[in-house]
Picture: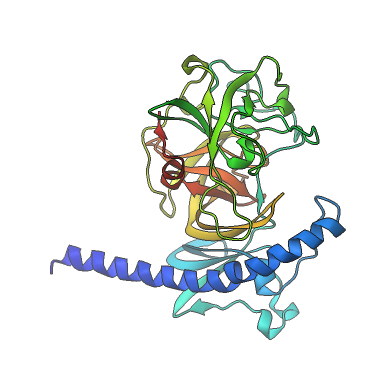
Length: 361
């Protein structure tokens, strides 16, 4: 066996060990509690006003929101050591925790790394966040743009008129029947609620879109979000009203140059409806997470975690649906759908395209 083959085999064995340890912890803290949590969720939503938060519970199955694989960070510095990442809503001082509330320092000899993330939510915006305040040379994604470009504001009209919303146009995709707008299920289909054919507007009605004049597409299909079993993607497509009404060029970034698999420490960027252009780094892959939706707390497997550079936020509410691309190559890596103030969660782009049976245009 050559040295290179031996090195590859060793790396594969190490990755298999990491994945096995990650899956063990995810089963214990993410997936096993999910069914019970889903049952409690309905009663909680009936008893507590929408948007209210429950007190942070130090019990690991309650406080742990994600389990992934990434580089261990010690005293704010990268170590070059792969670890099982334990994403918690709040880090408690050890002195305040009971023995059975302590998270393990290692799993089968593999180190762990605990990170505080706040609360993971899907990132659709149903209320204005702030006026657009980017530099004058940066495009404003909340205006009417023709042809409409990925990175700009889009959205549906709530049939019950209870909310006015906006999300982000992720990419132009295609199949044998034509071109489509790609975004999240919760941006285009309102978490499974909207019928096929529902109109999609640019800009979203929250950003001044006009339901009489600003339709650019019609909801075509979506991957159904599951409340009682794990999800892999949050995605949907809407067929455009005409090919000329959209462009595949992402605002400020340009057209995607194919796809690439996310890797730990990969430098990435995106353009979204709320935060515009931002740069970050992939810090965890193959990550299982719990995310708050209107449907309840949903679990997702095999997700990507991105953190903004220099302590900045990579995304915020309204950036859902943004396409995340590798810097330097502009290859599409992921579809942004959720996160917290510090961490962004995204689906692997190949999982999204395969689920919808489309390709990048």
